[in-house]
Amino acid sequence: MWQTVPAGASGQERKVGFTVPQDQLGYIQVRSTAFTMPVAKTQSSVEDAAHVSARAARRWALGHPWIFRSDVTVRPGRPAGAVVVVDHRGKSIGTALWSPASEIALRMVDAKPLDDLDQSWWRTRIRVAANRRASLDKLTNAYRVVHGEADACPSLVCDRYDRWLVVQLLSAGLEAFRARIVDALMDALAPNGILARNDVPVRKKEGLGANVELLTGDVPREVEVNEHGVRYLAAPWTGQKTGAFLDQRENRVMIGERARGRALDCFSYHGSFALHLGRRADSVVAVDVSADAVHRAKQNAARNDLTNLSFIEADAFDYLRDVERSRERFDTIVVDPPAFAKTRASVPAALRGYKDINLRALRVLAPGGLLFTASCSFHVGRAEFFEMLRSAAADSGRRVALRAMTGQPSDHPEVMTIPETGYLKGALLEALD
Ligand code: SAH
Image (cartoon, rainbow, N blue to C red):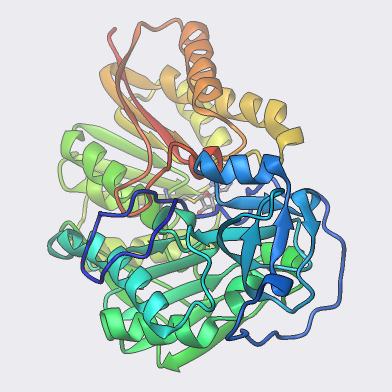
């Protein structure tokens, strides 16, 4: 189980966890309970402990930190914060963040029964996470510093944008430690400011409000990201997620290095893939349905002195159909759509959407052309994603080779024992004829 390790002992924990894809978690219906801001208690006692079922204890023993409400046999009689957790035999199994209103009632944070998660506990935990990313500093100034369960900090997300941090506190148990988390982040990274992008629906399931709040210092509206030499503006206050899609960084570099000829970036948002493609391809067309996204993508192209990019505000499905009709072909294509499956129930429809867009892309791929395609839907598993691609390849009438399978970058680790950790899947395909 997770142990507290000394500061600087990067990568030595026995167990790491993941970042909750906020809009993709398989939450079950949550009782709506009024919630007032809790204060972290400094002493846990046996009476305050949460008692959990054998099933819950086994789940934790197998590496999953969540304990659902239905597995809590005796609920702690106290507000959100940290609690000691005991199993059905009365034996301690560690310490958890306690969220009274949530369906995920307990999130295990340590295998030891701790009286409190004090300042030094948080400083150590966050320092370890930050140290694990230290080697990224020479490649980029924007990356995920804390990836929730992956960094043994369940429900905490922290992204770095140059000298500023953007956090998301996604559970009531975690909120109780807000001040200590801010202190720990200041201690580990000394940022100029920390912004909370807590404007996410998942907080409602915890009985928490949704807002955007400056926690300390100041944070600009726009921050220039330098990603392997490609520069673009992130918008911490208003952009998607915490301001940019940092989780595609390694995939952007991968396809950027292989790009050639005429390139196409579908669902381009601020043009991040297009900018990488533009460094090697002769020309790049970036397509997004949002006028605002297209506007920003244009600004980003200018920022990189790239003159071989053009931008189209359009529905990518329609655009690809028109391209197919016109017999235009592309040598390098990226398809990085938003999550089509927000819930398990929407998976069949989502798979039809994924197949449709990939089929259209394969049809307009020049012989020898490359397609990088991705899905960030948590509910669409790897196997379903690849089955969908197989089916699209079959329908395309092309001979399509699978050149690489990709997942999340090193700063967004996917943990083997926590299936929910894997949300981003990618494939590099080549049209052989
Ligand atoms: N590739 C981007 C992230 C894409 S996010 C990056 O690496 O940063 C998904 C984008 O798809 C959003 O910008 C959204 O505006 C756009 N989008 C959603 N539906 C679309 C559609 N039908 N056609 C084109 N763009 C769409």
